[in-house]
Length: 472
Ligand code: FCB
Image 1: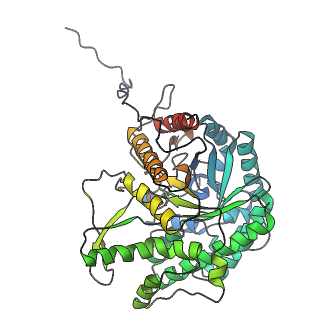
Image 2: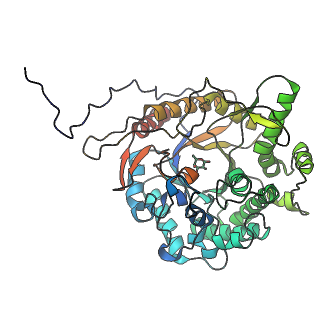
């Protein structure tokens, strides 16, 4: 009897195709905007090219032990050198819009003084490539890469950083505003302030709650001043907004102590960002709670008027929800894990209904502002991606995650929320901050040894979903 052996290196058969989610999403109309998102430090690499100076993420990622595997963004996806190919890849996905961020220390090394022509040229070329392929650029001015020099002068806890940001925003809008219509001032100020200056798991890695609360206020001020400066140089058609990641919090029970804990978590995770920007005030309960911790927001006269500039849209990033119960002092709140919810590789709990609840709540409590989901997506272990012809990444989990969350957006729209678009995080696998390269959020796979890009099944599904729903 002969036994047939597989030749060495033979490929295992591909997993059987699973039924893909239905690309028709109830509630999404033909004018809905479909996009993907990235950020500068996570994809560009080329950290010392053409006059760029270090940001706090260069310093932090080169601090031993700060990042999983001691990964850093020195090369990342090498997007700085591969940009035209990446835009061609993007064009192949047939989506409407691309959200990217500008690296502040590339555009204005050191964070003050004149612009760096070569740095600006890169974004100029990127914008032209996008427009040539019919893709609408959405530019984020700050996705966490503060010039190190500004951190050395106090960082976001120092008021001057907000003034520096306004200058930088004007430089960027003056150069690109004739072609970039959509501007996002800041990405997730919660993370910049709380993860960077309180928890310390993000750059600059400080652990000082008062400094973090000062950072919150100065980020808001930076936003408000930047909005004014963008509008002062960009055409009147400019659409200016901010991207927040408001916590979506549920009380673990009807017990008044748990409900108070949820209210407190909502205050520090959502309303402390939403209220000043959209209502021109800090929530009173949050200010009182901070005072109980001996901490104050460094508000000066006229700041709140500067902060609460009229906006054209609000960007909302959503990944998971929190269930909280009353906890021990001094925290007072405790996260309650939900074992019935599946988890991603982060591991973050998957709960699409939280997206519906968050969007409907924001449009109810802060009426009149159009919403865009500027990030949503998931890290899963995709397995190996064959580098040869026929290589595919069958990321069923990510495809289902995106389909379920798009359906959740559709339900929010049907419930009356004015949600106008969705940007999948992320166009490609990239440097996932403190988690390094192991956590893959891309709808396009990146082989970091060869820099080869391979669209995953989720990218092809998103392309189909955009096309099917546009044609409705
Ligand atoms: C968000 C960040 C983005 C990415 C995703 C997973 O908080 O804005 O850069 O890291 O999380």
